[in-house]
Length: 100
Ligand SMILES: [Zn+2]
Image (tube, rainbow, N blue to C red; front, side):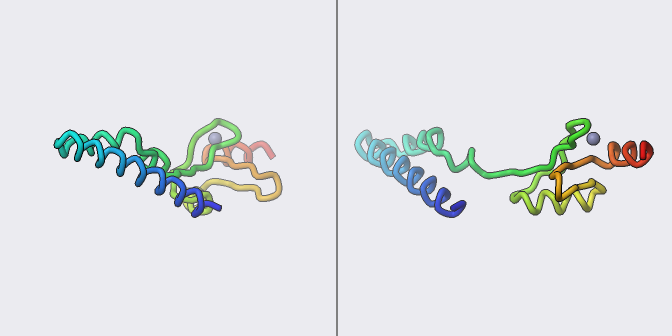
């Protein structure tokens, strides 16, 4: 599903590029093609995921995928509960441990 949406985005971007290439050819100015970047969605849709602390709202290091973000957060000392899908940053984790 994720790869399908990427293909749709790429198809749209190629269409945008083709339209602006046609305009550039029509007006004989190559730099008109550069304006296509403004209408492309590829640069805006690079997915970045991170874990957010359920106690203080701190964001973990971001990564390309959800799994990689979790892996990096766990390496950095974050606590993740699979059953409740909760996350705690290292600081809140120690506070929680002190409570119980
Ligand atoms: Zn926290």
